[in-house]
Length: 290
Image 1 (cartoon, rainbow, N blue to C red):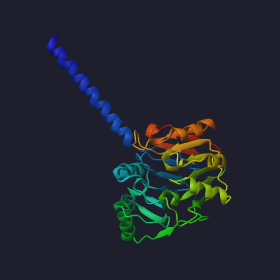
Image 2 (image 1 turned 90 degrees about the horizontal axis):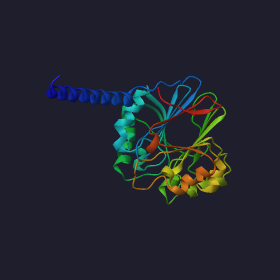
Image 3 (image 1 turned 60 degrees about the horizontal axis):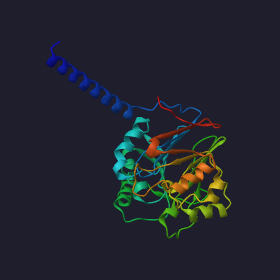
């Protein structure tokens, strides 16, 4: 083969390999996740960048906690639809910061919604305004989140609101809904951005905070996860939702060191991307993909 023809042939092959590889990457990022939902509780810590979003699936019911930033709303909708979500039985907006409710209006508009929960605190942001408008457009009311409220997630499952325990916090993060979910013998604690003041209230109120999985407060900031609180929870798995190379420095080294000292497994959305944990009621395993 002449040199020019050989070079042209080589170039075409390289281009074809590149295109095929890219197509494969795109397909894998959007394909449906093949999860065994029967007799299991599946918890998705969805990568929404520097924000929070968690989907819990159990007993054919779906609970969404937060909705990430407005920038991630289309990615979130695709993720939910790829996992065959048509209805969200419950939504909890832990507190009205943009990185937790930024995509909420789009989620409300895109899916059938059962009941909506949020703490008694408002915000002046566009995301909050859009969320309220979307709720009104579907005639949905906000159930004010209070301690000892139970959400019905079916048999062998307990879902209880533990916080907020006040209506007069100076720090909006402390209004965060803290939720404990138990499925048979497995347990999870979801903390929003609750800071040390809210953590101390949970301890003082005598709640059973023990949980195998802890959704780490405030993206792993040093303003959350006090040593006393961590001792009460005593998790085996810690999940941190944060954006890659975020300007806040989350998660903070001080927080990571606390988990390392207790030999707790750490998963992070900035490194691990979407994190899916599956519980059969006894053991909790990380889903490794199709």
